[in-house]
Every structure is written in C-alpha cells, then in structure tokens.
Image 1 (cartoon, rainbow, N blue to C red):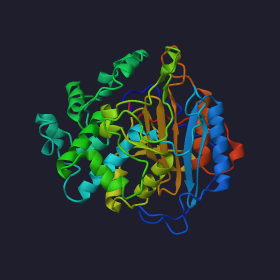
Image 2 (cartoon, helix red, strand yellow):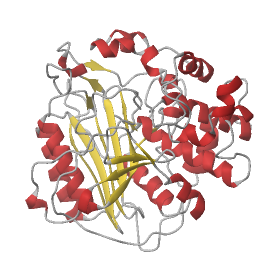
Image 3 (cartoon, rainbow, N blue to C red):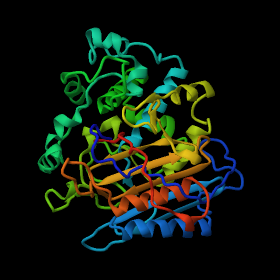
Image 4 (cartoon, helix red, strand yellow):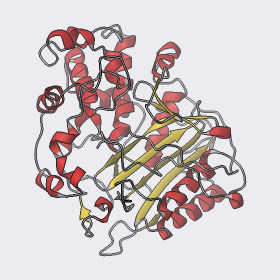
Length: 423
C-alpha cells in the first residue's frame, strides 16, 4: 500500500526463463476439491521452491516465505530468519502483513454488494456518502473510480509519513501506536489538491479504499472488516487471515519487520508491532501466502463473483509510465511476455512486502512475503539501485509462473515494478 513511486524496482521482476508449467481443476469456494488436500504438497515442487527461497536469503533478504500451486500440486516453504538478533528461523505459514493485497478483498466485497443491487458501480459516491464526500466532488467521483484509482482523490499517506521522503524514520516511529479513524484519513486525502479530474487518469490513493470501506459500512450496516470476514474470509476457510483492528501485535507466529530506508541512516528499524488503523481497509489485513493463493484461486475461478461482475473487475485502466501494468477494480494485470497476463496485487508496509500473482484462471499461483523493505541503496538521482535480492526474486517469480526448466534462469529483466502498496 503505497502512494509514491520510488521504491518498487524489483518487486515484480519477471525474467525470460523456462520452468514448471502446470494445470489442474478446482472445486467450490470454501471447500477442498476432490483429490486435492491443502497439506498434500509436492516434494519436487517444494524442493525447487526451497532452492529459490534459499537464493533470495543468500542474496541478503533476512527471511522469505512463499506458496506455489500448479493445478493440484502445491508447496509452501520458507528460508532465512524471522529475527536477525536471535536467529529464530522463518517458517512457512507465518502470519504476514499483506498491506495493499487487502484492496482485492475489499473490492470483491463491494462488487458482491453491486450484485445484490445495493451499490451501482457508476453511481456517484455522494449518493452513498454525502457527509464524507460532499458537494460537486461527491457527484463527480463514482464508485468505480474509487476501486480503479481514477478518482483524483489524493493519498493521505504522505501527510502521515512525510519524513519517509527525507529517508528519516521520524514519522514511522512517531505513529507506531497512533489510532486513526477512517474519517480522519479521508479528510486528510480530501484536504489535499486533487491529483487529476475524476476519471481522467490512474493515480494510486489509499484514500479511495478507506472510502470503499465506509461505503460497505453504509450499505451493510456493519463494519467493513466484519463484513469482509463474514462474506469472504470465513466461507473460504481462511483461518489465518484477519484484520488486526487497533491491536498493534500480530496475533499468530510471525517475523520481525525490518525497514532499511535505503540505508539512510544505516540502521534498520523494526516495525512488526504497529497500529495499522492508519491503513484500515486500504491495507491492514494479515494473512499467509497459502491463504492468499486460496483466495485468488476462488476469485479468478469465478467462485466469489458472477461472470459478468468478474469481467467488470478485470476491466483495466493504464498505469502512467508503466506499460506492462494495468489496474482493474482492486486487481492488477501484469503483462509478462510469453507467460501471458498475470493477475493479483502486491503490498508493502514498513518492513514487510507481499506479492500475489496468478494465471488468469487461478490455476498457476505464487504468493510470497519478505521481511526487509527498501534495502536498495539510492543513486545520485534518488532512485533505487538494483540489488542481488531483486534478481533472485525475479528468478523466483519466473520459475513459479512462467514454466520451464529451473536450470535456465537468466538475469531478470524487471517489469516496471508495481506501485500499488500501502505506502
């Protein structure tokens, strides 16, 4: 979940390699298809995944975990440490802040309300939230514009974490235990100058998804977190996926979260304990790689939304200056050359990055999380320099999603990295 465009190089780096091509059927949402067991992982697939994760760790990432699935074959592995001080190992299935991957869950929930006739995609937001988005703006910005980031409403994150742009941890530390209300976050975004005319172009803003959460509150009569949990998380059996609320502590087994701030200053901050009300329905969700795969498999397989609604979700707009990336309704499309289009989302919050990418039908999947962010040093223009970690993450993505021979990994040629993160 991010609102700026400088730290994303290498997150979605996809190289021209050949690897594991696979297919397979799936059953109904919330149930394990016949013959498929979530715990029945493929040994060979697991060995290949572990080798890739070991390479990411050896390149400098403290800890990384991932889950892959190809049809009925799956694997979940981890490498490295969850705590650099004690050497405690990172394990597959550790709980992880998935940041802006939250947006796909929230968009799906809104679209389910569209299916029930309670929300119109092209209706003005002011129809539902006149107190939060009053006047002309409320009449010009539509629900669709919130979900595809074309509303022109500015991102509040720069207001809260302004020191990040100076490579200073001051605001990160100051806000660690600060409680934020959705109304407060929305006002911060609306009080800034618009980034563009409504509908004119794509401009990433977390304010859009806090508003989407308040829209859910208005039409369902319950908190958006409770609604998403009741409507999506519980039916899919996602027992390790949850909103933490105001609790700053990750409830289950988890890693530390290290923020390097591009080595300016040289010390790393540790932010696994953090009040995520500043992210809310834009990026507070906690999950695991395996459970993200299960969610996206259900979504892309047509088990959460009707066919025409899913088609609306896949209607994309261009992301400026990133020709290989387009954005739908809480869903990004990555053009990956011979691999074909990949769908999913990424997320980044202080000390944790998540990437979840999938084939169009959800049969080939990769989700991973790492516990060190902004590890690249900056060049004289303030842009991140490529790091060996980026190359190995690119090789992981290619091996998991592009099919072929894992011995033929070449130097990744990064796609323009994805700008859709919590911060």
